[in-house]
Amino acid sequence: MLYIKNGLCIDPKTGMQKVCDILTQGDRILRIGEGLEGTEEFRKLPRHEIQTIDAEGYIVAPGLVDVHVHFRDPGFTKKEDILTGAAAAAAGGFTGVVMMANTKPAADRADTLRYMLEKGKDTLIHVYTCGAVTKNLEGKELTDMEALREAGAIGFTDDGKPLMDEELVKRAMEKCKELGVPISFHEEDPAYIKESGVNAGEAAAAMGLTGADRQAEISLIERDIRLAMQTGACVNIQHISTREGVDLVRRAKAEGADIHAEATPHHFTLTEKAVEKYGTLAKMNPPLRTEEDREAIIEGLQDGTIDLIATDHAPHTKEEKGKTFTEAPSGIIGLETALALGITELVEKKKLTMDELLCKMSWNPAKLYGIDAGYLAEGGPADLVIFDPDCSQTFWKFLSRASNSPFAGRTCRSEIEYTICAGKVAYIRNMSMSALDD
Image 1 (tube, helix red, strand yellow):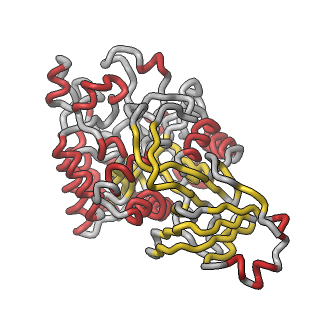
Image 2 (cartoon, rainbow, N blue to C red; image 1 turned 60 degrees about the vertical axis):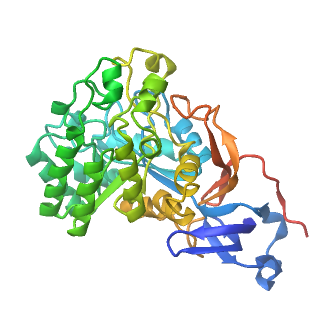
C-alpha cells in the first residue's frame, strides 16, 4: 500500500484541485481525502505494509498517457526497444503509452502485435499498441483489422507514412467505426515535399533546399475530415503543424465531426529557425514551421481544437543523426522532456492552466483510446505522477537509449519525483520514502 500525503492533488476529469492524501491498495486508489492518517479506517491498516510519500510542495496528478510513441521494437532495437522506451516514459511521468505500428515487421499481423504487448508486460508501465492500417504499411491493402483488434490493438495507424488511396482510407474508417476504435493519420502528401524534415521556407532556403510545403498537411487533413464526416469514424490528426490545419480541425469540430488532434511539445515550442541552430536534431516530419504556425497551435490548445499533447517519441542512433541533413532520419525523442516543456512554454507563460495541460496529457488521451486512466478517484487506477512544478532542471542525460533531442542542455521548469503505475513505483528521483511509523 502507498500513502501519499500533503500533495496538491489535481484531477483533470473533475477539476478537483486541493491538498489532500491518497491511499492505494493493490493497483487501485482506496481513499482520497484530507487527514486520512487520522481516520479509524487508516489506523486499522497493517502499518508494515504501508509506504509513505510526503508530497508536500508537489503536485500529485494522474499518470500521463502518450498516444504516439515509437519504441522501434521489433526490428530497430539499436535505436530503442520496449524496455528502454518504457523506462524513458516512466522518467517523464507517463504511466501509459500507445506504440505505433511502423516496426519491422510492421504490426500488421496478430503475432507481431502480441509480441509487442507481451514484451510490454515486462515493463513497469502500461504499454498499448496500434495495429497497422495496411499490410506492410504499403498503403495498398487493408490488414485484417478485426484480427488485430482481437489480438489487442486499441487503434489503427500507418504513422510515418501517409495513406494516399482515398477509397482505401474510407474503408479503413468504416472498419474502425465498426470496431469502435480511433484511426490516426500522418498527414503529409509527398507530392508537396521536395526534401522532408524542413519547412519550405526561410530555413530550407538558407540550406539550399526546397523543403516540405505546408499544403502537404493541409490537403490530407481536408480529405480526412471530409471522409470522417461521411463515415462517422473517430479520427485523430497526428502531430499537427500548420495554422490552416488547426483551422480545419476547429471548423470540423464545430460541425460535429468526431475529430481529434495532437500537438507535440516541439511544435508548440520551436520554429523552423531551430533547424539552422540544431541541424538534424530539429529534423522531423511534419517539420517545424513558422512562428505564426506555432502560435496557432497554442491557440488550438487553448480553445480545445487540439485536445491531445503527444510526444511522437522517435529515437535514432547518434550515427544516423550525424549524417547530412538530407540523409539523416526525421524525428526526436520526447518522453522525458514533454511535461517540463508543457509547464515552461504553456503554464508558466499563462497559455494553459496546469489543469488544462494535465487534461491534454492524461484524461483526453485516455478517453480517446478507451483506457482506464487519466483521473483520480476512489476505486480508480493507482497510476500517478508526483512532480515539483517550481524547480528547474537541465536535460543532459536520458533513460531512452537515444539522445536525439534539440532540448538537450535546455533548462525547464518542473521535475518528476515519482511515477507510480498500478500502485507500484515505476520511477523515483530522490524523495524520501519510508515505511509509515507506528
